[in-house]
Amino acid sequence: MSLVSIDTIFLNQIKKTIGWPDIDKLLLDDDQIKDLIVYEQLQNYFTKFPITMEHSENIMGEKILDFPDEFVFGVLDCRVVDVGLLGGVGGTFWDMAASQAISNTYMTNGRSGAYGKQRYNPSGLLHQVDHQRQMLKSRQNQYTTIKSRVDYPNRKLYVYTSSPGKLNITWAKYSNDFNDVIFERKNDVIYLCQASLMMHLANSAAMLNDASLEVTINFEYLKDQADKIKEEVFERWSQIPDVILVHAV
Image (cartoon, rainbow, N blue to C red):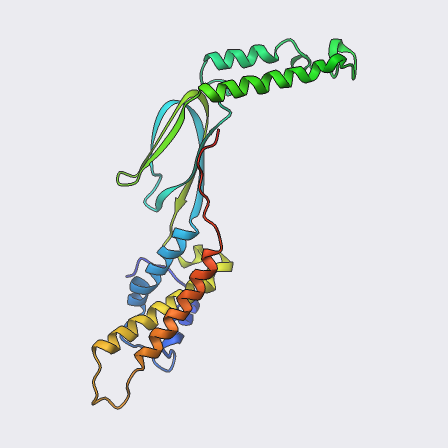
């Protein structure tokens, strides 16, 4: 039994390109079409449009995370946020500096103005606290080390930070279920499956060409049509940029 799951109505849309239902079976049966044709195009689709799975946890120092399941094939996004300002995960210099920078001010005592007087802000006193915090954050970023590395052969993610923070990961997954293809892209995957099925038939006909047969297959036409369909789909997909994360704190 095939590992690929696809509803009959979509499978019939793929088979119609080689004459179904007038021709019930031509070289490949339904399970073979799923394994040899649909599976390959699902891989192409999820490589470009992976399923996302988010994960978040506290981090300090180094963490080594295994890929969550067999369908996870990579990492779309990995970043450490709230560095040095996350309570309960450490007591570093930056935690204490940030705490002292905002202590005994209107931010902690809940007042809406300096010295307890509403809207009283002499010489921009209230804004100085925010400026001080921004300066502290800049210095913290300068002296904080954050790095990550994906070990694809061993299916592991390595993350290190010299300051405590929150680790946010977006995993990339694939699926063997056609229903996991988003609605807007289902027709594209069907077109790619049709093209792949026509190409398979064309290649088989070219190798098994027999002049004594009453009916012959125009394999050149099938190849041309298959190439045209694939080119149109991949051209649409190429207009959608891939997301590349360089660094984020």
